[in-house]
Amino acid sequence: MDSVFKALSDPTRRKILQLLKEKDLTVTDILEHVHMTQPSLSHHLDALKRAGLVVPERNGQFIVYSLNLSVFEEAEAFILNFFSYDHPDTPSAN
Image (tube, rainbow, N blue to C red; front, side):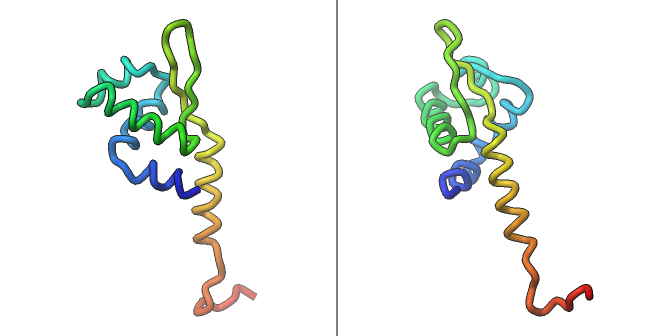
């Protein structure tokens, strides 16, 4: 889970994830929307892959990236569970 939150902490990576939320994209497609070099983009995509947030799939000579929604669901469950504890200062609803 640490690698997920580390990957999400970077604004460029969040922008890439927003782009992939709309549709699956190749590196060339992503480069049209972010202002960086291809090696820099590859570094960001590698961090997203290591965190399990994106999944690469070869399509001919291209690699198409898509979101791995199951990892987002795990992160969401973690966050919701983190905030759903009974606070000791909160009276019970009994």
